[in-house]
Image 1 (cartoon, rainbow, N blue to C red):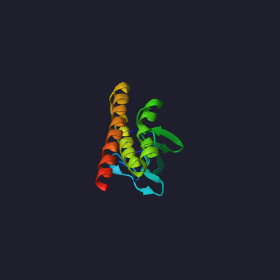
Image 2 (image 1 turned 90 degrees about the vertical axis):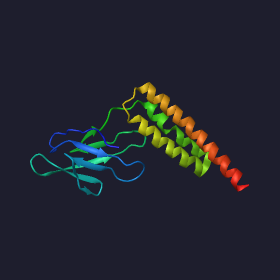
Image 3 (image 1 turned 60 degrees about the vertical axis):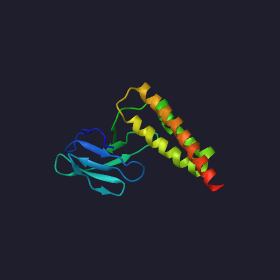
Image 4 (image 1 turned 30 degrees about the vertical axis):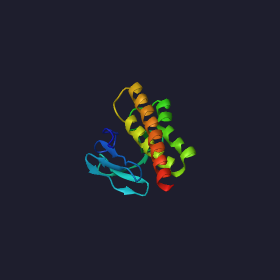
Amino acid sequence: MNTEPLHVAGVAGPIVIATKALFGHPAVTVGGVPAPRTGKRYALPAVDGGVVQATVRNVLADPYPTVEVNGVKHRTGPSTPIFLRILAMLPILLLTVGGLLGALVGALGVWANLTVARTRMTTAVKALSMVGIGLGTVIVWLAVAVALNVALS
């Protein structure tokens, strides 16, 4: 999913970050041109023709990454209320009762909740959607667990 264009002083164009669904490094573009990655940093073209170093940080419960340019952190999306961050992570609790299957289904639930958190819906609708996704993950986990139990016995 792509972030909204972010304008940072000294960078030659708007920064857009394409986050990966589950794993991998985000792709960074400046003015539509991919920024080369060196280690954990990105080389962004500067206004004066040089290069500005940037770091992209993803926090697990935050749906939007943060870009650090010249020591200044810039959010790539609006701030997410703490209760939505907690709701987004709740499906991973299936790990405690469902083992590997619960962890897999729970991780998919967390991914779906973070996708909902990035939408432009109101906070109340996001919260209701996340609760629905949480209940859906429990139902999917139960259905798959019962089906596996029947198939193996």
